[in-house]
Length: 168
Length: 410
Image 1 (cartoon, helix red, strand yellow):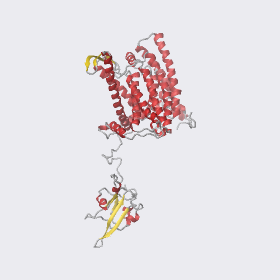
Image 2: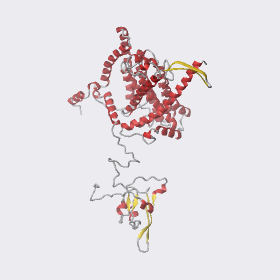
Image 3: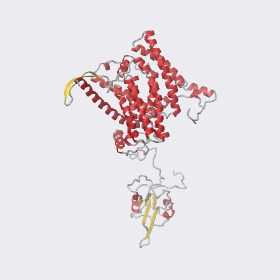
Protein backbone atom coordinates (compact mmCIF):
# COMPACT_ATOMS: atom_id res chain seq x y z
CA UNK A 1 0.00 0.00 0.00
CA UNK A 2 1.27 3.38 -0.96
CA UNK A 3 2.27 5.80 1.76
CA UNK A 4 -0.58 7.80 3.24
CA UNK A 5 -3.37 6.18 1.25
CA UNK A 6 -6.43 6.04 3.39
CA UNK A 7 -7.93 2.60 3.12
CA UNK A 8 -11.64 2.41 3.71
CA UNK A 9 -12.99 -0.68 5.38
CA UNK A 10 -15.35 -2.04 2.82
CA UNK A 11 -17.60 -5.06 3.07
CA UNK A 12 -15.43 -7.02 0.68
CA UNK A 13 -17.79 -9.96 0.48
CA UNK A 14 -20.41 -7.69 -1.01
CA UNK A 15 -18.12 -6.02 -3.53
CA UNK A 16 -18.61 -7.02 -7.12
CA UNK A 17 -16.14 -6.22 -9.88
CA UNK A 18 -16.99 -8.26 -12.92
CA UNK A 19 -20.69 -8.04 -12.45
CA UNK A 20 -20.46 -4.30 -11.88
CA UNK A 21 -18.37 -3.94 -15.01
CA UNK A 22 -20.85 -5.91 -17.05
CA UNK A 23 -23.72 -3.86 -15.70
CA UNK A 24 -21.89 -0.66 -16.54
CA UNK A 25 -21.19 -1.89 -20.04
CA UNK A 26 -24.83 -2.80 -20.55
CA UNK A 27 -25.77 0.70 -19.44
CA UNK A 28 -23.35 2.49 -21.76
CA UNK A 29 -24.40 0.24 -24.63
CA UNK A 30 -28.03 1.09 -24.01
CA UNK A 31 -27.18 4.76 -24.12
CA UNK A 32 -25.79 4.40 -27.64
CA UNK A 33 -29.30 3.88 -28.97
CA UNK A 34 -31.10 6.50 -26.94
CA UNK A 35 -32.19 9.82 -28.38
CA UNK A 36 -29.51 12.49 -28.64
CA UNK A 37 -30.12 15.45 -26.36
CA UNK A 38 -27.72 17.85 -28.05
CA UNK A 39 -29.22 21.09 -29.40
CA UNK A 40 -27.19 21.70 -32.55
CA UNK A 41 -26.78 25.40 -31.98
CA UNK A 42 -26.29 27.33 -35.18
CA UNK A 43 -29.09 25.38 -36.89
CA UNK A 44 -31.40 25.06 -33.88
CA UNK A 45 -31.58 27.98 -31.49
CA UNK A 46 -34.24 26.58 -29.25
CA UNK A 47 -35.78 23.21 -28.60
CA UNK A 48 -38.78 21.98 -26.66
CA UNK A 49 -36.49 21.54 -23.66
CA UNK A 50 -34.71 24.83 -23.82
CA UNK A 51 -35.45 28.30 -25.07
CA UNK A 52 -33.96 31.60 -24.08
CA UNK A 53 -35.64 33.20 -21.06
CA UNK A 54 -37.92 36.16 -21.66
CA UNK A 55 -36.15 37.96 -18.82
CA UNK A 56 -32.73 37.47 -20.43
CA UNK A 57 -30.79 40.76 -20.35
CA UNK A 58 -28.56 41.11 -23.38
CA UNK A 59 -27.27 43.92 -25.57
CA UNK A 60 -29.42 47.03 -25.72
CA UNK A 61 -32.04 48.27 -28.09
CA UNK A 62 -33.40 51.80 -28.42
CA UNK A 63 -37.10 52.03 -29.19
CA UNK A 64 -38.30 54.45 -31.84
CA UNK A 65 -41.55 56.32 -32.36
CA UNK A 66 -43.71 56.30 -35.51
CA UNK A 67 -41.47 58.80 -37.30
CA UNK A 68 -38.46 56.59 -36.69
CA UNK A 69 -36.92 58.96 -34.16
CA UNK A 70 -35.68 57.57 -30.89
CA UNK A 71 -38.07 57.77 -27.97
CA UNK A 72 -35.25 59.09 -25.81
CA UNK A 73 -35.79 62.54 -24.30
CA UNK A 74 -32.25 62.81 -22.95
CA UNK A 75 -33.45 63.08 -19.37
CA UNK A 76 -30.13 61.71 -18.12
CA UNK A 77 -31.60 59.11 -15.77
CA UNK A 78 -29.96 56.10 -17.40
CA UNK A 79 -26.33 57.39 -17.20
CA UNK A 80 -27.17 58.44 -13.67
CA UNK A 81 -28.41 55.01 -12.59
CA UNK A 82 -25.89 52.97 -14.56
CA UNK A 83 -23.61 51.20 -12.04
CA UNK A 84 -20.97 50.48 -14.67
CA UNK A 85 -20.97 54.03 -16.04
CA UNK A 86 -21.18 52.75 -19.58
CA UNK A 87 -23.75 55.15 -21.06
CA UNK A 88 -22.54 58.37 -22.64
CA UNK A 89 -25.34 60.89 -23.19
CA UNK A 90 -25.04 64.44 -24.55
CA UNK A 91 -28.49 66.07 -24.53
CA UNK A 92 -29.68 68.48 -27.18
CA UNK A 93 -32.81 70.57 -27.68
CA UNK A 94 -34.54 71.57 -30.91
CA UNK A 95 -36.24 74.91 -31.61
CA UNK A 96 -39.62 73.62 -30.36
CA UNK A 97 -38.08 72.74 -27.02
CA UNK A 98 -38.04 68.96 -27.51
CA UNK A 99 -35.07 67.35 -25.89
CA UNK A 100 -33.26 64.63 -27.77
CA UNK A 101 -29.86 62.92 -27.45
CA UNK A 102 -27.08 64.45 -29.52
CA UNK A 103 -24.81 61.57 -28.61
CA UNK A 104 -26.06 58.35 -27.05
CA UNK A 105 -23.45 55.63 -26.77
CA UNK A 106 -23.38 52.44 -24.75
CA UNK A 107 -20.10 50.64 -24.21
CA UNK A 108 -21.28 47.03 -24.17
CA UNK A 109 -17.95 45.88 -22.75
CA UNK A 110 -18.39 48.04 -19.65
CA UNK A 111 -22.07 47.16 -19.31
CA UNK A 112 -22.93 44.68 -16.58
CA UNK A 113 -26.40 44.00 -18.01
CA UNK A 114 -28.23 44.88 -14.80
CA UNK A 115 -31.16 46.32 -16.72
CA UNK A 116 -31.45 49.41 -14.50
CA UNK A 117 -31.48 51.66 -17.57
CA UNK A 118 -34.59 49.95 -18.88
CA UNK A 119 -36.15 50.05 -15.45
CA UNK A 120 -35.47 53.73 -14.89
CA UNK A 121 -36.37 54.99 -18.36
CA UNK A 122 -39.54 57.16 -18.16
CA UNK A 123 -40.18 56.98 -21.91
CA UNK A 124 -39.57 53.19 -22.29
CA UNK A 125 -36.91 54.08 -24.81
CA UNK A 126 -33.78 52.12 -23.82
CA UNK A 127 -34.17 48.38 -23.29
CA UNK A 128 -31.94 45.41 -22.68
CA UNK A 129 -32.55 42.78 -25.31
CA UNK A 130 -33.19 39.05 -25.46
CA UNK A 131 -30.15 38.50 -27.64
CA UNK A 132 -26.78 36.80 -27.38
CA UNK A 133 -25.10 36.64 -30.78
CA UNK A 134 -22.74 39.59 -30.47
CA UNK A 135 -19.54 38.52 -32.20
CA UNK A 136 -17.57 41.31 -33.88
CA UNK A 137 -14.15 41.52 -35.47
CA UNK A 138 -12.89 44.48 -33.44
CA UNK A 139 -13.30 45.87 -29.96
CA UNK A 140 -14.44 49.34 -31.02
CA UNK A 141 -17.50 47.80 -32.65
CA UNK A 142 -18.81 47.15 -29.16
CA UNK A 143 -19.50 50.82 -28.44
CA UNK A 144 -23.04 50.97 -29.77
CA UNK A 145 -24.10 54.42 -30.98
CA UNK A 146 -27.66 55.69 -31.22
CA UNK A 147 -28.13 54.64 -34.83
CA UNK A 148 -27.04 51.11 -34.08
CA UNK A 149 -29.17 50.89 -30.96
CA UNK A 150 -32.18 51.91 -32.99
CA UNK A 151 -31.40 49.45 -35.74
CA UNK A 152 -31.60 46.43 -33.43
CA UNK A 153 -34.68 44.33 -34.01
CA UNK A 154 -34.41 41.59 -31.38
CA UNK A 155 -37.09 41.26 -28.68
CA UNK A 156 -36.57 43.20 -25.49
CA UNK A 157 -36.33 41.89 -21.98
CA UNK A 158 -39.32 41.58 -19.70
CA UNK A 159 -38.18 43.04 -16.43
CA UNK A 160 -39.11 41.60 -13.09
CA UNK A 161 -42.61 42.60 -12.15
CA UNK A 162 -43.42 42.67 -8.43
CA UNK A 163 -47.02 41.83 -9.23
CA UNK A 164 -45.94 38.71 -11.10
CA UNK A 165 -42.73 37.57 -9.41
CA UNK A 166 -42.41 34.25 -11.27
CA UNK A 167 -42.89 35.71 -14.72
CA UNK A 168 -46.14 33.90 -15.48
CA UNK B 1 19.33 -11.56 -57.23
CA UNK B 2 17.26 -14.28 -58.70
CA UNK B 3 13.81 -13.48 -60.10
CA UNK B 4 12.20 -15.36 -57.21
CA UNK B 5 13.97 -13.26 -54.61
CA UNK B 6 13.06 -10.12 -56.52
CA UNK B 7 9.44 -11.24 -56.68
CA UNK B 8 9.39 -11.86 -52.95
CA UNK B 9 10.90 -8.45 -52.24
CA UNK B 10 8.51 -6.71 -54.62
CA UNK B 11 5.48 -8.29 -52.97
CA UNK B 12 6.88 -7.49 -49.53
CA UNK B 13 7.28 -3.83 -50.44
CA UNK B 14 3.79 -3.68 -51.90
CA UNK B 15 2.33 -5.30 -48.78
CA UNK B 16 4.34 -2.99 -46.57
CA UNK B 17 3.03 0.14 -48.28
CA UNK B 18 -0.53 -1.20 -48.33
CA UNK B 19 -0.56 -2.22 -44.67
CA UNK B 20 1.18 0.93 -43.49
CA UNK B 21 -1.21 3.23 -45.31
CA UNK B 22 -4.18 1.16 -44.15
CA UNK B 23 -3.02 1.41 -40.55
CA UNK B 24 -2.43 5.15 -40.76
CA UNK B 25 -5.80 5.85 -42.38
CA UNK B 26 -7.46 3.41 -40.00
CA UNK B 27 -5.89 5.09 -36.99
CA UNK B 28 -7.07 8.47 -38.24
CA UNK B 29 -10.59 7.13 -38.61
CA UNK B 30 -10.37 5.50 -35.18
CA UNK B 31 -9.92 8.90 -33.57
CA UNK B 32 -13.21 9.88 -35.17
CA UNK B 33 -14.82 6.61 -34.14
CA UNK B 34 -13.67 7.09 -30.57
CA UNK B 35 -15.27 10.52 -30.41
CA UNK B 36 -18.42 9.27 -32.09
CA UNK B 37 -18.72 6.33 -29.69
CA UNK B 38 -18.04 8.65 -26.77
CA UNK B 39 -20.76 10.95 -28.00
CA UNK B 40 -23.31 8.20 -28.54
CA UNK B 41 -22.67 6.73 -25.12
CA UNK B 42 -23.32 10.16 -23.61
CA UNK B 43 -26.43 10.86 -25.71
CA UNK B 44 -24.53 13.29 -27.92
CA UNK B 45 -24.16 13.13 -31.69
CA UNK B 46 -20.36 13.38 -31.63
CA UNK B 47 -18.35 15.40 -34.16
CA UNK B 48 -20.55 16.12 -37.18
CA UNK B 49 -19.36 19.45 -38.54
CA UNK B 50 -16.52 18.59 -40.91
CA UNK B 51 -17.81 16.75 -43.94
CA UNK B 52 -20.84 14.46 -43.98
CA UNK B 53 -21.33 12.89 -40.52
CA UNK B 54 -18.00 14.43 -39.50
CA UNK B 55 -16.10 11.98 -41.66
CA UNK B 56 -13.44 14.56 -42.54
CA UNK B 57 -12.77 15.41 -38.90
CA UNK B 58 -9.51 13.37 -38.80
CA UNK B 59 -8.25 15.26 -41.85
CA UNK B 60 -9.02 18.57 -40.16
CA UNK B 61 -7.30 17.40 -36.99
CA UNK B 62 -4.28 16.25 -38.97
CA UNK B 63 -3.93 19.56 -40.79
CA UNK B 64 -4.37 21.42 -37.53
CA UNK B 65 -1.64 19.37 -35.88
CA UNK B 66 0.75 20.04 -38.75
CA UNK B 67 0.36 23.81 -38.61
CA UNK B 68 0.42 24.13 -34.83
CA UNK B 69 3.47 25.49 -33.06
CA UNK B 70 6.11 23.01 -32.03
CA UNK B 71 7.00 23.85 -28.45
CA UNK B 72 9.94 22.53 -26.52
CA UNK B 73 10.56 23.16 -22.82
CA UNK B 74 13.78 25.12 -22.25
CA UNK B 75 15.15 22.58 -19.82
CA UNK B 76 14.20 19.53 -21.85
CA UNK B 77 16.85 17.18 -23.16
CA UNK B 78 16.29 18.06 -26.79
CA UNK B 79 17.68 14.90 -28.37
CA UNK B 80 15.65 12.50 -26.25
CA UNK B 81 12.67 14.84 -26.40
CA UNK B 82 12.68 14.50 -30.18
CA UNK B 83 13.47 10.81 -30.11
CA UNK B 84 10.70 9.77 -27.72
CA UNK B 85 7.65 10.22 -30.01
CA UNK B 86 9.41 8.26 -32.74
CA UNK B 87 10.34 5.53 -30.28
CA UNK B 88 6.76 5.10 -29.19
CA UNK B 89 5.35 5.39 -32.70
CA UNK B 90 7.61 2.97 -34.58
CA UNK B 91 7.07 -0.20 -32.47
CA UNK B 92 3.34 0.45 -32.35
CA UNK B 93 3.09 0.51 -36.13
CA UNK B 94 5.54 -2.36 -36.60
CA UNK B 95 3.39 -4.70 -34.54
CA UNK B 96 0.74 -5.06 -37.21
CA UNK B 97 3.36 -6.37 -39.66
CA UNK B 98 3.29 -9.96 -38.44
CA UNK B 99 -0.46 -10.43 -38.10
CA UNK B 100 -2.07 -12.43 -40.93
CA UNK B 101 -4.88 -10.26 -42.23
CA UNK B 102 -6.54 -12.81 -44.52
CA UNK B 103 -6.21 -16.28 -45.98
CA UNK B 104 -3.03 -16.75 -48.01
CA UNK B 105 -3.43 -15.73 -51.63
CA UNK B 106 -2.16 -18.02 -54.38
CA UNK B 107 0.11 -15.88 -56.53
CA UNK B 108 1.74 -17.03 -59.73
CA UNK B 109 3.57 -14.64 -62.00
CA UNK B 110 6.75 -14.52 -63.98
CA UNK B 111 7.20 -11.28 -65.82
CA UNK B 112 9.72 -8.62 -66.76
CA UNK B 113 9.25 -5.21 -65.20
CA UNK B 114 11.06 -2.02 -66.20
CA UNK B 115 14.01 -1.08 -63.92
CA UNK B 116 13.65 -4.23 -61.78
CA UNK B 117 14.01 -6.89 -64.43
CA UNK B 118 12.52 -10.35 -64.30
CA UNK B 119 10.41 -11.06 -61.22
CA UNK B 120 8.63 -14.25 -60.34
CA UNK B 121 6.57 -15.65 -57.49
CA UNK B 122 4.93 -19.04 -57.26
CA UNK B 123 2.78 -20.36 -54.47
CA UNK B 124 0.77 -19.04 -51.56
CA UNK B 125 1.46 -15.49 -50.51
CA UNK B 126 0.70 -14.91 -46.82
CA UNK B 127 -1.39 -11.76 -46.33
CA UNK B 128 0.93 -10.42 -43.67
CA UNK B 129 3.87 -8.13 -44.24
CA UNK B 130 6.15 -10.70 -42.63
CA UNK B 131 4.82 -14.13 -41.76
CA UNK B 132 7.52 -14.70 -39.18
CA UNK B 133 7.93 -18.17 -37.69
CA UNK B 134 8.30 -16.39 -34.31
CA UNK B 135 5.58 -13.82 -34.94
CA UNK B 136 4.18 -14.31 -31.50
CA UNK B 137 7.49 -13.59 -29.74
CA UNK B 138 8.00 -10.61 -32.04
CA UNK B 139 4.71 -9.13 -30.86
CA UNK B 140 5.58 -9.54 -27.21
CA UNK B 141 9.04 -8.05 -27.75
CA UNK B 142 7.91 -5.03 -29.73
CA UNK B 143 4.85 -4.22 -27.67
CA UNK B 144 7.11 -3.84 -24.65
CA UNK B 145 9.48 -1.63 -26.64
CA UNK B 146 6.80 1.04 -26.70
CA UNK B 147 7.44 1.75 -23.03
CA UNK B 148 10.85 3.21 -23.91
CA UNK B 149 9.22 5.97 -25.89
CA UNK B 150 6.83 6.76 -23.06
CA UNK B 151 9.42 6.61 -20.30
CA UNK B 152 11.87 8.73 -22.32
CA UNK B 153 9.14 11.24 -23.14
CA UNK B 154 8.33 11.55 -19.47
CA UNK B 155 11.93 11.87 -18.41
CA UNK B 156 13.29 14.13 -21.15
CA UNK B 157 10.50 16.69 -20.78
CA UNK B 158 11.98 17.65 -17.41
CA UNK B 159 8.57 18.24 -15.89
CA UNK B 160 7.20 16.64 -12.76
CA UNK B 161 3.92 15.55 -14.31
CA UNK B 162 5.66 14.02 -17.29
CA UNK B 163 8.16 12.26 -15.11
CA UNK B 164 5.47 10.71 -12.93
CA UNK B 165 3.57 9.68 -16.04
CA UNK B 166 6.66 8.09 -17.53
CA UNK B 167 7.46 6.24 -14.32
CA UNK B 168 3.92 4.99 -13.99
CA UNK B 169 3.97 3.83 -17.59
CA UNK B 170 7.16 1.86 -17.17
CA UNK B 171 6.03 0.21 -13.94
CA UNK B 172 2.59 -0.57 -15.33
CA UNK B 173 3.75 -1.89 -18.68
CA UNK B 174 6.44 -4.08 -17.16
CA UNK B 175 3.98 -5.54 -14.64
CA UNK B 176 1.33 -6.31 -17.19
CA UNK B 177 3.83 -7.52 -19.77
CA UNK B 178 4.57 -10.42 -17.41
CA UNK B 179 0.94 -11.41 -17.05
CA UNK B 180 0.36 -10.93 -20.78
CA UNK B 181 3.26 -13.14 -21.80
CA UNK B 182 2.39 -15.83 -19.28
CA UNK B 183 -1.28 -15.82 -20.19
CA UNK B 184 -0.34 -16.85 -23.72
CA UNK B 185 1.81 -19.81 -22.72
CA UNK B 186 -1.19 -22.21 -22.61
CA UNK B 187 -1.95 -21.14 -26.16
CA UNK B 188 1.56 -22.11 -27.21
CA UNK B 189 1.15 -25.40 -25.32
CA UNK B 190 -1.87 -26.26 -27.45
CA UNK B 191 -0.73 -24.94 -30.80
CA UNK B 192 2.88 -26.02 -30.32
CA UNK B 193 4.15 -23.21 -32.53
CA UNK B 194 4.78 -19.49 -32.24
CA UNK B 195 3.88 -18.59 -35.82
CA UNK B 196 0.57 -16.89 -36.30
CA UNK B 197 -0.36 -18.91 -39.36
CA UNK B 198 0.11 -22.12 -37.38
CA UNK B 199 -1.90 -20.77 -34.46
CA UNK B 200 -4.73 -19.93 -36.86
CA UNK B 201 -4.44 -23.30 -38.57
CA UNK B 202 -4.71 -25.05 -35.20
CA UNK B 203 -7.86 -23.07 -34.41
CA UNK B 204 -9.34 -24.07 -37.74
CA UNK B 205 -8.78 -27.74 -36.97
CA UNK B 206 -10.08 -27.54 -33.43
CA UNK B 207 -11.98 -24.83 -31.61
CA UNK B 208 -11.30 -21.12 -31.47
CA UNK B 209 -9.02 -20.67 -28.49
CA UNK B 210 -11.58 -18.50 -26.68
CA UNK B 211 -13.35 -21.72 -25.70
CA UNK B 212 -10.56 -24.03 -24.53
CA UNK B 213 -8.49 -21.16 -23.13
CA UNK B 214 -11.06 -18.78 -21.72
CA UNK B 215 -8.98 -17.65 -18.75
CA UNK B 216 -6.01 -16.93 -21.00
CA UNK B 217 -8.31 -14.75 -23.00
CA UNK B 218 -9.53 -12.99 -19.87
CA UNK B 219 -6.03 -12.26 -18.60
CA UNK B 220 -4.79 -11.31 -22.05
CA UNK B 221 -7.64 -8.88 -22.58
CA UNK B 222 -7.01 -7.12 -19.29
CA UNK B 223 -3.26 -6.91 -19.82
CA UNK B 224 -3.91 -5.81 -23.39
CA UNK B 225 -5.83 -2.86 -22.02
CA UNK B 226 -2.91 -2.08 -19.75
CA UNK B 227 -0.51 -2.30 -22.68
CA UNK B 228 -2.47 0.24 -24.70
CA UNK B 229 -2.49 2.70 -21.78
CA UNK B 230 -6.22 3.07 -22.16
CA UNK B 231 -8.84 3.51 -19.51
CA UNK B 232 -9.18 1.97 -16.98
CA UNK B 233 -5.37 1.71 -17.14
CA UNK B 234 -4.56 5.19 -18.39
CA UNK B 235 -2.56 6.14 -15.32
CA UNK B 236 0.43 7.29 -17.40
CA UNK B 237 -1.65 10.12 -18.80
CA UNK B 238 -4.37 10.46 -16.15
CA UNK B 239 -5.47 13.94 -17.13
CA UNK B 240 -7.18 14.63 -13.83
CA UNK B 241 -4.02 13.93 -11.83
CA UNK B 242 -1.08 14.49 -14.17
CA UNK B 243 -2.40 17.03 -16.69
CA UNK B 244 -1.53 14.78 -19.62
CA UNK B 245 1.19 12.65 -18.07
CA UNK B 246 4.11 11.72 -20.25
CA UNK B 247 3.03 13.84 -23.22
CA UNK B 248 2.16 16.96 -21.21
CA UNK B 249 5.00 18.96 -22.77
CA UNK B 250 4.43 17.84 -26.34
CA UNK B 251 2.55 19.81 -28.97
CA UNK B 252 1.58 19.59 -32.62
CA UNK B 253 2.74 16.57 -34.60
CA UNK B 254 4.92 15.18 -31.81
CA UNK B 255 1.81 14.89 -29.66
CA UNK B 256 -0.02 13.40 -32.61
CA UNK B 257 2.60 10.69 -32.86
CA UNK B 258 1.76 9.62 -29.31
CA UNK B 259 -1.92 9.52 -30.20
CA UNK B 260 -1.20 7.53 -33.35
CA UNK B 261 0.92 5.14 -31.31
CA UNK B 262 -1.92 4.67 -28.82
CA UNK B 263 -4.46 3.93 -31.53
CA UNK B 264 -2.04 1.69 -33.40
CA UNK B 265 -1.66 -0.22 -30.15
CA UNK B 266 -5.43 -0.56 -29.93
CA UNK B 267 -5.49 -1.94 -33.46
CA UNK B 268 -2.73 -4.39 -32.58
CA UNK B 269 -4.36 -5.58 -29.39
CA UNK B 270 -7.69 -6.00 -31.17
CA UNK B 271 -5.99 -7.84 -34.02
CA UNK B 272 -4.16 -10.08 -31.55
CA UNK B 273 -7.31 -10.93 -29.64
CA UNK B 274 -9.00 -11.72 -32.94
CA UNK B 275 -6.06 -13.79 -34.16
CA UNK B 276 -5.15 -15.64 -31.01
CA UNK B 277 -8.59 -16.33 -29.57
CA UNK B 278 -11.11 -15.87 -32.36
CA UNK B 279 -9.47 -17.77 -35.18
CA UNK B 280 -7.97 -14.84 -37.06
CA UNK B 281 -9.36 -14.81 -40.58
CA UNK B 282 -11.14 -18.14 -40.05
CA UNK B 283 -14.79 -18.37 -41.05
CA UNK B 284 -16.48 -20.70 -38.58
CA UNK B 285 -18.34 -23.90 -39.57
CA UNK B 286 -16.88 -24.12 -43.04
CA UNK B 287 -13.68 -25.22 -44.76
CA UNK B 288 -14.35 -23.17 -47.85
CA UNK B 289 -12.05 -20.42 -46.60
CA UNK B 290 -9.04 -22.72 -46.45
CA UNK B 291 -9.12 -23.60 -50.13
CA UNK B 292 -7.22 -20.51 -51.26
CA UNK B 293 -8.19 -18.05 -53.92
CA UNK B 294 -8.81 -14.37 -54.45
CA UNK B 295 -12.43 -14.48 -53.30
CA UNK B 296 -11.47 -16.44 -50.19
CA UNK B 297 -8.79 -13.88 -49.38
CA UNK B 298 -11.22 -10.99 -49.69
CA UNK B 299 -13.99 -12.65 -47.67
CA UNK B 300 -11.66 -13.88 -44.93
CA UNK B 301 -10.20 -10.41 -44.70
CA UNK B 302 -13.72 -9.14 -44.19
CA UNK B 303 -14.20 -11.64 -41.37
CA UNK B 304 -10.87 -10.73 -39.78
CA UNK B 305 -11.75 -7.06 -40.03
CA UNK B 306 -15.15 -7.63 -38.43
CA UNK B 307 -13.60 -9.47 -35.48
CA UNK B 308 -10.90 -6.86 -35.08
CA UNK B 309 -13.41 -4.05 -35.38
CA UNK B 310 -15.54 -5.54 -32.62
CA UNK B 311 -12.57 -5.61 -30.27
CA UNK B 312 -11.59 -2.07 -31.19
CA UNK B 313 -15.12 -1.06 -30.34
CA UNK B 314 -14.87 -3.06 -27.13
CA UNK B 315 -11.78 -1.08 -26.09
CA UNK B 316 -13.70 2.16 -26.61
CA UNK B 317 -16.76 0.74 -24.91
CA UNK B 318 -14.71 -0.06 -21.80
CA UNK B 319 -13.09 3.36 -21.90
CA UNK B 320 -16.41 5.13 -21.66
CA UNK B 321 -17.73 2.74 -19.02
CA UNK B 322 -15.06 2.35 -16.36
CA UNK B 323 -13.26 4.94 -14.25
CA UNK B 324 -9.50 4.89 -13.73
CA UNK B 325 -7.80 2.57 -11.26
CA UNK B 326 -5.95 3.90 -8.25
CA UNK B 327 -2.27 3.21 -8.75
CA UNK B 328 -1.79 0.70 -5.95
CA UNK B 329 -4.95 -1.12 -7.02
CA UNK B 330 -3.57 -1.32 -10.53
CA UNK B 331 -0.37 -2.90 -9.27
CA UNK B 332 -2.33 -5.23 -7.00
CA UNK B 333 -4.44 -6.45 -9.90
CA UNK B 334 -1.37 -7.02 -12.03
CA UNK B 335 0.84 -8.81 -9.54
CA UNK B 336 -1.58 -10.36 -7.07
CA UNK B 337 -4.37 -11.52 -9.35
CA UNK B 338 -3.36 -11.74 -13.00
CA UNK B 339 0.14 -13.11 -12.48
CA UNK B 340 -0.80 -15.98 -10.10
CA UNK B 341 -3.87 -16.65 -12.20
CA UNK B 342 -1.90 -17.05 -15.39
CA UNK B 343 0.83 -19.06 -13.68
CA UNK B 344 -1.69 -21.43 -12.16
CA UNK B 345 -3.51 -21.66 -15.45
CA UNK B 346 -0.32 -22.73 -17.23
CA UNK B 347 0.06 -25.56 -14.70
CA UNK B 348 -3.54 -26.68 -15.05
CA UNK B 349 -3.55 -26.56 -18.83
CA UNK B 350 -0.20 -28.31 -19.10
CA UNK B 351 -1.41 -31.13 -16.87
CA UNK B 352 -4.74 -31.28 -18.67
CA UNK B 353 -3.09 -31.52 -22.08
CA UNK B 354 -0.79 -34.25 -20.83
CA UNK B 355 -3.73 -36.19 -19.41
CA UNK B 356 -5.90 -35.70 -22.49
CA UNK B 357 -3.24 -36.52 -25.05
CA UNK B 358 -1.44 -39.31 -23.24
CA UNK B 359 -3.88 -40.45 -20.57
CA UNK B 360 -7.00 -40.61 -22.72
CA UNK B 361 -5.16 -40.62 -26.03
CA UNK B 362 -7.45 -37.97 -27.62
CA UNK B 363 -5.13 -36.25 -30.03
CA UNK B 364 -7.85 -34.96 -32.33
CA UNK B 365 -7.79 -31.13 -31.96
CA UNK B 366 -11.56 -30.92 -31.70
CA UNK B 367 -11.89 -33.52 -28.94
CA UNK B 368 -9.00 -31.93 -27.08
CA UNK B 369 -10.54 -28.49 -27.49
CA UNK B 370 -13.93 -29.64 -26.25
CA UNK B 371 -12.53 -31.38 -23.19
CA UNK B 372 -10.47 -28.29 -22.35
CA UNK B 373 -13.61 -26.22 -22.86
CA UNK B 374 -15.42 -28.28 -20.24
CA UNK B 375 -12.47 -27.84 -17.89
CA UNK B 376 -12.57 -24.09 -18.55
CA UNK B 377 -16.23 -23.85 -17.70
CA UNK B 378 -15.40 -25.20 -14.25
CA UNK B 379 -12.25 -23.11 -13.86
CA UNK B 380 -13.91 -19.95 -15.08
CA UNK B 381 -16.80 -20.45 -12.70
CA UNK B 382 -14.36 -20.93 -9.81
CA UNK B 383 -12.20 -17.93 -10.71
CA UNK B 384 -15.14 -15.62 -11.09
CA UNK B 385 -16.60 -16.91 -7.86
CA UNK B 386 -13.41 -16.03 -6.00
CA UNK B 387 -12.68 -12.77 -7.83
CA UNK B 388 -16.18 -11.47 -7.62
CA UNK B 389 -17.27 -12.84 -4.25
CA UNK B 390 -19.72 -15.09 -5.97
CA UNK B 391 -21.84 -12.28 -7.24
CA UNK B 392 -21.40 -12.85 -10.94
CA UNK B 393 -22.38 -16.47 -10.44
CA UNK B 394 -24.88 -16.28 -7.65
CA UNK B 395 -26.60 -13.05 -8.52
CA UNK B 396 -27.20 -10.01 -6.42
CA UNK B 397 -30.39 -10.86 -4.58
CA UNK B 398 -29.23 -13.45 -1.97
CA UNK B 399 -26.36 -11.18 -0.94
CA UNK B 400 -28.58 -8.17 -0.50
CA UNK B 401 -31.04 -10.21 1.51
CA UNK B 402 -28.39 -11.64 3.81
CA UNK B 403 -26.91 -8.19 4.23
CA UNK B 404 -30.31 -6.78 5.15
CA UNK B 405 -30.84 -9.67 7.58
CA UNK B 406 -27.55 -8.98 9.33
CA UNK B 407 -28.46 -5.32 9.63
CA UNK B 408 -25.71 -3.93 7.41
CA UNK B 409 -27.72 -3.53 4.25
CA UNK B 410 -28.86 -0.06 3.43
